Length: 287
Image (tube, rainbow, N blue to C red; front, top):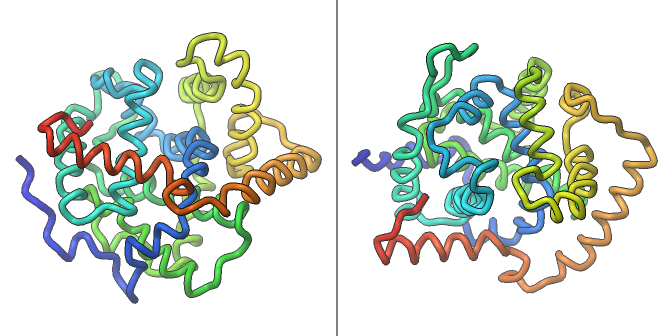
C-alpha cells in the first residue's frame, strides 16, 4: 500500500486557499456535464497523456468501453480533490495509484509516458482548473479578484491529491495564466488522437439512439468550450453567431441552476463523494 502523503504535500503554497465549505459555493455540478469532454481533449492534447489513456491496459476504466464507470471515477476524483477531507484524498489517491501502475510506455508507442509523472499531472490539473474558471466566468461573470485567487489556490488539490508537488502549482493566477498560454500554444493533435477525440465528441461510446439525439448538441458544446487553438487543431469551425447562441444557452442554464439550493447545485459532486465514502465503508473498490 502506498504511504499517505505528508501534510505539506497536500497544501498549496502562498496565502490561504478557500476552505472546502467555501468552495462548495463556487462549484456548479452542471459544469461537469457541460465541460467534461472538452476538458478531456485539453488534457489529452499533451501527447504523452493521450497515449497513456489510449494505450492503457485498464480497459474497465476506458470511457469508450465503460463510459458510466469512467464518468463515476472521474467525477469522484474531482469531488474528492475539491470538497473531500484528508482521509478521502489519501484513500482515493491509493485507489487511483493502483489503476495507474500499469499505465506507462508500451513497446512501439510513439511517445514516452508514465501516469505517475508529476509534470503530466500538472498539465491535467491545469486543464481542470481552467475549465472550472471558464465555466464560472461564463455562468456567473467575473469573480472578485481575492475570491478568484483563493479559489485558484484551493484548486492546487487537483494535482496534489496525486503526485504533483505543491510547489509545482504556479503561485498566483497571473503566473498560472502565463504557464497556461505558453504550454497551450505548444499542443498539437495528431491523427490518432483526433480520431479518438471525434469519437468522444460524437458520443460513440453510447447506444446509437443517444448518439443521434444528443451527438449534435454535444459537439456544439465541446466546440464552444475548447480554446481556439485546440478548436483549430480539431478542424472545428466557430462563428460569432455560434458564440452568441452558446452565450444565451449558458445564461438560461445559469439563471436556473445558480438559484438552486446548494445540495442540488452541487450535484453530482456531492453524490459521488457520498458514494465513495459508502464504498469505502462497505469495502468495495473505489475505482
